[in-house]
Length: 433
Image (cartoon, rainbow, N blue to C red; front, side, top):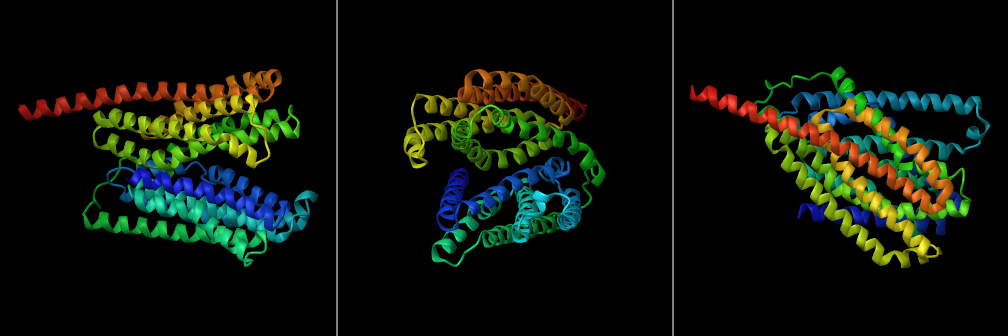
């Protein structure tokens, strides 16, 4: 039931953001759409970079059986993020007023501040919402995620249609304000969990790897790996921009955007809860980790295949709505990208398992090797096969990512199971003696 609720929330959020883009174009014009797109792109990038290498490890520790010390570290981390936001804002203001970059200084102050505050608030909202999921509060996390990704869009749509919202700056204010409220609610949830742990007398239970500095050291390899993974997600698009015409590139990006929704749905319904469950399974009993991983993989595959079939059934009306042709070329490109994003959804589960297994250095090295191998191949495919080549380039990267992550995770899962079994046997032997 919870899975269906999360699925419904995610589909509704995607639909609302899609409708919002159309309403903004009709009521405020395409210049407003460009500003909105800038804020959206910057929020995606900032959500990765502003984590500073802490996010992966702090969420892993919050998912453990006794996360009291992790909650303390998470609070300190939020203060650090606040300091970083202020420092970046001061730097942007200085650069803007010094007019060091003419194109930058020509941006309207309202747009500049709106985009910057959206980026900061989106990162804060993402971090705190992930804390809620990591603390095994999936219902609260699902509600907060929907409010952050779809709820504010619904308010903006109503405001635009009613004539109350008349500028993109107001939309930015709604977006930012919603993230702030969601962050406050998430922090309250984390504080409540902290009080519960103290009441259960878990204060004395400490993690052997506790410490604010160790959070950064343990999380840094995954930070580099995530940056490379993001590059592999969009790499073929940047390469294609050097080869394709604007029309061809736009057609590819449109098919890519439709296909990527299946990964977004799988992440919001499966991965956000699979990660904490895998960490808890590993910390409680390493022997059940493999079974937990298999269930998550099967759930992700099931969700993404259903979503892919649904997109194929309605792809013609979607393409016609955007005044795009839907012939064999478009269908072939869409099919390849759908297969690619099914694989990316599987890789998200393996990524969560790799975090639980704490194999960041191996994953970072593996992602570097995949990126180094894929870039020349992608360039060749794009130059020879045009849009189909770009889709195949994305698919080739997906195959490499899944293959290398699966190899690392499976190998370490077998080793973990063997260690856990050996430990149990030793304990039984001691008890028998």
